[in-house]
Length: 184
Image 1: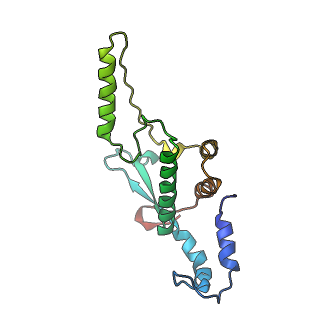
Image 2: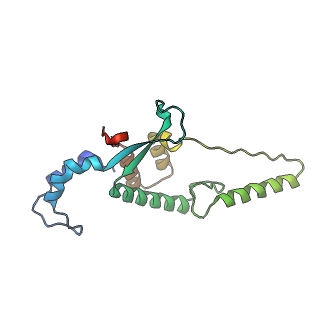
Image 3: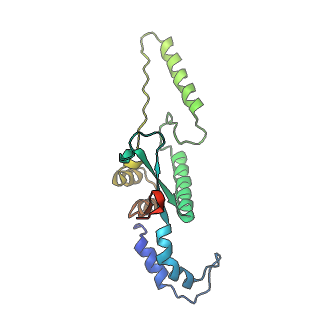
């Protein structure tokens, strides 16, 4: 299934008969058609915030962009996250030792597992215990979308769900609100 694009949604909204009865949301088609150019800008807004305590605000790294998704975008993101979580659990797509972002797994569990493995190794004098902690800074922002989609297909995630994810990650637009309220 090809991904859903903003152009496709615009075409669908534009081509629907304006006088058709509204659905359960009560929003008439004519209202959507007339508001579409206006609301597109509000589907995502990015606010640029200063990071506190930075010595030089001329450095772009002294700022943090915060993307504010529309309620519809947040709802879709939540649905996709729940479906992916279900698939991960149902088909054991992550190693048992994976802790981060898994329901029922906590920092306490991670410490418990680390200590348990360490004690086991200490009891066996021929083995050495080593530990490595990683914090992949900016990992989410640097995910290769093509590789992600490839890996999802490789793990047999349903094509329709992959299509939604691919669409959600493609052709993203935002408006930027700068200090003082100026938009760009």
